[in-house]
Length: 472
Image (cartoon, rainbow, N blue to C red):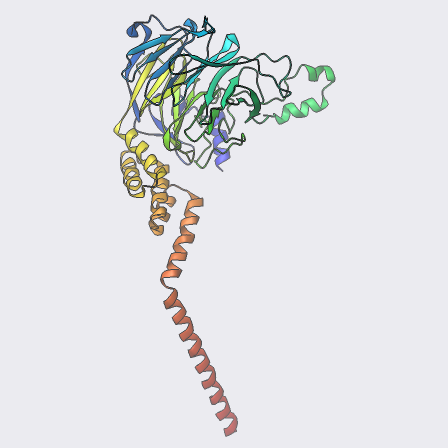
């Protein structure tokens, strides 16, 4: 039933969500429903305001643990560093390599570790540059060698993240085998997390009957490339592939297995309903924060979609346009505390978004549940529902909080409200067991009394029968 509704909504209907920039969410039935704004735009930050001249096609930025903002001004081959008040700290345009100054060429991605080491995907120089906190060169990763790599491969890194063990993961141009993993010394070890091959059944059937010449002109069945990556504090890589598939967002463990939970009404894919002319969301950046909350950027509509760890859509904001809070060519998103930063490549500016009361309440509800504070989660989800009656998944959050508090009957009611069949069944079984446990002694006593009565009744009936026989 749900799949049928999705197909109809995708191919035929021009829904409000496809044409509006106002906040919305999706119901269990795939309908776009109104939602209060979770974020609102407050300011723009550009190069001229910072005193560094116009930014030229910035492509990436990163907020460090100490809330420093490292922005990659790609067209100017430099890194602009800001503090949390958006004041200029420094610009990084070169580094010393064995006594000579080296510069960057079309750098496309960067990452800053907890120790403030900087990793730069120096794309046109075909290397990843690792600088320490004082901007001293630590190492350069280039020209990876392995039997797993084609001898004609040209290393052009586009993005980079680093885990707590100092393993480096690189998203490289033209690589369909997943992310490239490098050890602490900078040597290539393996590929992880390759996307599944997307096969069109009609095209596959056509290839079966096509001639060799016709097949040579057709597209190969190859996995899609990733479009972005981020890593959380536990070392799990979150990634997007932007191809509109049901697994357009992934959470990869150390073996490259996708362990993302998809327990929401729909898989995390951006917009569920859209017009055929525009097509599905193209996810080009991902940002993961605490409590398994993650956000993705849709390049087609300029929208930011945020999900909780179970895959429920929390809120949507942004859009393409000329007003504050809308973008021309958004390319990257980051969080600064609970604020959102969106980088626009064409306009060369950062839009800053702050939370509304609704956004803060929903964020804290999810965080409270994840850290096991059921009382706070229950109260905060209740507040969120009062502000947005259309937020169906909040009832599931309330139900889960009640489930942990062992209030199974009330949990069942809330799971029924959210149409969460799996958790409703779980709550029902626990509630049934609770009833049986509470009334076990009474039930067993009743059974024993009934058994004794049946025995005496049987004896009594036998005596009556004997008297009747004797009288005959």
